[in-house]
Structures are given as structure tokens and as C-alpha cells.
Image: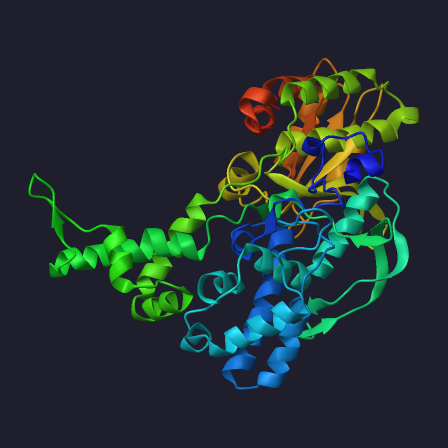
Length: 481
């Protein structure tokens, strides 16, 4: 049974920021450090920084011949069942790294020329150059190293969805980039059937099928060797009837005998430009997981269901919580993957002020990517959302409440979700005044806007809601005072 069912959340995977795992089986997705390194939003940046801290320290120990300390450091990378990701059958147990695997792989590391030659620069390079390491093991390594980030994320998501946590549960070992050491502490954790569980943002998981030794060997190393044989006119060169010369990959493989990971390491030492090309081109092939992840859900049905729920919630303070929770799910669906990691009621100014919902800006295209690049006065690493389930007019106090949360560090862009606006568009004019006074950008979205975006979503995805925002932004910027 999935987390959403266990805790009766009444939300589909589209409406959830985390992968809706079934704790009794592994979900065939992976934490891929290469993919995480290419994500440019706060959670991913922090996680990648922690991964880099660990790997650089491990390399320094190995290259400095501090083998015992390096082995101790590596021993904590064993299999983790907390995330329930991987390729196991039945209960999560992973094809990842048990204690024997960890010891065996460390021996492989000690013998790997890639460690000492300098060609291995990132933790994801284990998959390319170190024998017996593939996506399961790298995913396990990653989960252990960034466990503290995942614990904090899990707490935030549980708070967001009112899922109970258990106090004084061991965190398990995690890497502390500040102290450069493994740490363990008692903390609040999500526990299901007696087992601690980590929720993972769906924005950072992948199938881990691009940054692999097989891809590097087949499409880069062999391509290079084919061209070299053609250039040197070796015995592997054949001719078509037309006279055009060619060399087959099959003949190259036979000539080289075994192109294993040690071979890839030697080749990369001699031709680092080929590996650099592999890294660049692979980054362009990575695609984000769909908002439904692996669930077979009819998106039309989900959108229609959300439209019905929005219509059914009456205005007024008695239903403010229901409205608030529904808006979180609708915005998660409409904006994924451009907004991610929503947090509820975030304290700022030492708790004197609170923000209803805060999203990470994880956009790589679209409205929230273009906005800060086209207008430096509108930084938006985070997007703030205030929800007003009012029957009356939304006025200056609500506007000032949201703009008062802005700063250059946190961001200066917000969304005010409300049921409707006044007929004479007075609130939009107030938003224009706020923008004109350099107090930030506030864009209101109403039930009409959300229903239109939900109607468009099955065909246009995120573009549906972002076109609405872009139109309102234009109206605010060019509003006649």
C-alpha cells in the first residue's frame, strides 16, 4: 500500500511532490548524483554540495595513502532500505551495498587506476570506472550521503500533509559537510510498520539509464576507435559496394578483446576529451520523471476531479484549511517540474511572520526561469504563495502581507490564490502599484484561472498555467495608472 493510501491523503501522485512509494516493495527509480548535479534549485544544490564534500574528502584520503581512514569513511555507504527505491523484488532489500559488497568494492577502488590518475572527478564516475558498481549501488551511496537532506524533506512533506512523525528515532549515518564526518542523531522520522521511511522528491529521481559505462563505451569510446581505424586504414577497414569505407563496432570489440571498466579508465587517461564530450552530451539527454511518476493515472480524470473539489469548497474561514490543502495539490500538478518541494507555513523574521506555502523554483525553462533572467529586480529562488478563501474583496492588507515576506535572498515573486477578484480590477492595479514601487511582483490567481489551467493541462501541461501568469504579469507591468 502506498504512502498516500496508508495515511488516507486522498491525493494522486500528480498532486504530491514526493515519490508515492509502497514501503513493502522497491520502486524502480534511482537517486542519480549526475542528474542531481544538473538540477539547479535549492534542495538539489545543497544535496550536490554534500555529495561533492564526501567524494572530494574520500579521494583526498585515497590519494594521500590514508587507507584505513578512507576504508572507515567508505564503510558507511552500505545499502539503505529507507528510500524504497531500486530493483528488488518483494520487500526492499536492494541490489545495493551490503557490508560484504562495501568491503569488496573498496578493494576494487584501491586497485582502480581511475582513482589515482585524476580522471574520476565525481561520485557518479564510480559507475563508469569501478567494477561491480551500477545504478543500485550508486543510488544507495547517494541516499546515505544526503540522508540528512532527505530527513528534513520528509519532515516538511509530513508537515505539509499532516502525516504523523515519531520522536527520537535514530537518523542513521549521514554525511555532515561541515565537520567532514559521518554523524548519527535522534530525530523525528516517518515510521511505517516499525520501519523508518524517507520520502524522496520526484524532481530528483531518474531511471539512471544515461550516465552509464555501457553508454560511454558504445556511443563514445567505440565511435572514437572506429574513426581511428578508418584514419589509420587498419585491417579492420571494409568497403561497401559503392567504395565507401567503414569499420564495424563488432570488429573493434573483437580487436580490443575486452572493453571493461579498467579499459575505459586507461582509454580516458589517453583521451580525456572523449569523456568530457560524453558528460556534456549526456546532460542534454536526461529527461525529468513525469508528474504521475510510474502510476497509470488518467490525467483528464485527475483534473476534472480537482475542478469539482475546487467548486465544492465554500468560501470563508471555516473552509480555509480545505482550500489551502487543495491549492497545494493543484499547484503541484500544474507547476511540476518548474516548482517543487512545497513547504507549509514557513516562519521568517524569527517567527514573527509566516508564509502559507513556499515552493523551490526548479524551473529550467518557462515563466519562472525567464522572469529573473529578464528582470534582475525579480530574483525568485523561492516562490511564495498565500491562500485567501475570502468571500469579500482581496485588498491592500493581503497584498502588503505577501510583499512583506519578500527579500533579495528569499525572492521577490509571489502568487496570491483567491476565489475571485473585484469586477473593476482594483486588486490588479494594486499589484501594479507594488511592482512600480519596486516592492516585488505579486500575481493573483482565481478559481477561474485554476479551472482554465486544469482544463488545459492534459494537452499543454505546465504551459497552461504559465501562460496565464505571463498574461497577468504583462497586465501588471503595462497597467495604466
